[in-house]
Each structure stands twice: as C-alpha cells, then as structure tokens.
Image (cartoon, rainbow, N blue to C red):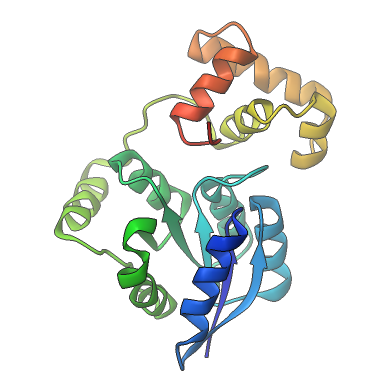
Length: 210
C-alpha cells in the first residue's frame, strides 16, 4: 500500500485529491497539510511513501518544503502539484529534489500514474516536452532567473505574507538579526528598495498568490 501525504492550502482541492487517491486499491491518504511547514512536520512524523506538495502554499512553498524534506530523508518521494506550466517551475521542482511535476489541469489523468511512478523510485514525466526539459536540465544544469539562495527565497515569501521579523525568525529558527541580514542582502541583489517591491517579486515568482 502506497501511503500518500497531500499538502495544499485549499481544502476543496485536498478533498478532491483524497477522493481520487483513496479510490485506488494500492494507495491511501495517510495525512494532509494546509501549508508547507505543516507538510514538512507531517512528513517527518508520519513518513509517507509519497508527499504531494502544491507549489504555492502559505508560510513555506512546496519547493522550499521539498528542500527541507530532502535534507532530512531520502525515503519519502516528493511529487510537485502546480497550476503553473512554465519551464522555470519545472526546473525549480527538479532542483528542489522532486521526482515528478504534475499540472493541476492534468491531475485527473496524471496524478495516480505519477504517484505510482515516484513511489517505485522513478521520475515521472507526463509529456515529450518535459522529457526534453529533463534532458536539458541534466546537460546544462538548472537555469535560475535570479541569484537568491533557497533561504533568501524563504525570507522573501514570509516578508510578502506580512510576517514580522520575529515571526520570520521563529518560522525559520534563526535570529532576528539573521532575518534582517537576509532582507538586506535580498534587496541589494534584486536592486529593490522596500517590501512593496518584494511583494511584487514574490507574486511574479509564484511564492505567494496575488
């Protein structure tokens, strides 16, 4: 039996995915999470076989959650679920350690096959286009649109969600001084001046929803 964790901040989406998965004779939904931080906690405590993570979630994106999961264990396979079809998100998912990437628009047809594929230790590709992208990524390495580190991206997301420095420090388990340093570095790297510009950047990058 393949045990699956579903992480999505929309309850109706989780309910639909749970219904789809629980209908399968060889899999079950072991747990659910409404944001990235809870997803990481439940993965580490429940140890599902596959974690299905929405790319855009509150507090911690699916991509950042995937990185944290991969830093703690190689036993849980990560499958990204997203409304975005752009190449950049696919590359980001691979770099974060995901074994597959499924568009929400094609979830009905692809999700079950994707779960079985990654649970078996293989990479799920649902089109010739993604196969070509995988080949390019393996040959050339990931192409990023900015110079921010994964931790700096986490800080940007939390700033865009109107968290205070103290709240960000608590969420990332660092000091407020470290948060301030990250914020200054981000503004410098991106050539920005204030939180408003960071929020716009976060929306463009899919870190938060508009």
